[in-house]
Length: 89
Image (tube, rainbow, N blue to C red; front, side, top):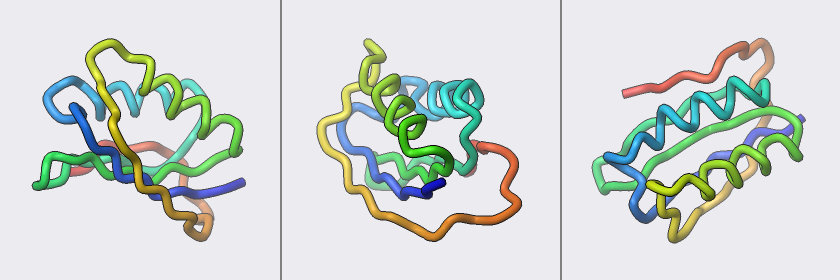
């Protein structure tokens, strides 16, 4: 079990990124949250099995409307008891 904070840059706002992230997280059984940032990037914290987190990122990158140009990734401590993946504002 891992938890990552990921800052996504590129064409990531106004393209359904957060909704695609929630759908992917739910389908892979991941938890965490995603939100738009004022600088045009999207920040996410995602938790689950490393392979599934990687598959989620790959699914987002393969979406035809989303254009991820760069990511900053940090490892975080796992949050015990987290049960959902949320879109936050």
